[in-house]
Length: 133
Image 1: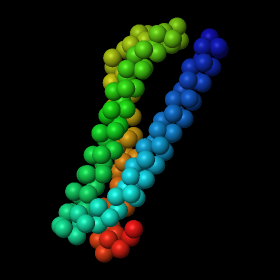
Image 2 (image 1 turned 60 degrees about the vertical axis):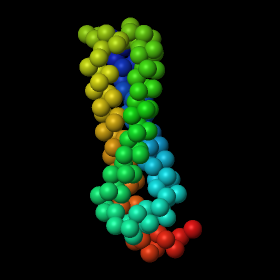
Image 3 (image 1 turned 60 degrees about the horizontal axis):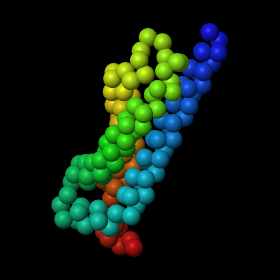
């Protein structure tokens, strides 16, 4: 039992590291994209866009990427699940509930990362944003 517990613990640690890296990666990509679109957001705000509209636009862009990534990840996970079949107790390697819960959790993490990266864009001063290159 000790070997199986260690393997499970090790997989859990790797999963936690993967979630942390996903959070950092999504935040970095969205922050970079927001930085490149500062002038566009300044124009939108100057023309009357509200903070909520800019926030929704940035989070929506990030979530579109996250949904595509989640779908590709589901395909890869389904294909690789057979390798983990011997380590699972009480569930099958392709348990639909597990796939659904993990996908929803990762999309929630992506939403949080997008929101944190989008906040600065939503609070831009239009005059300052338009002066930047």
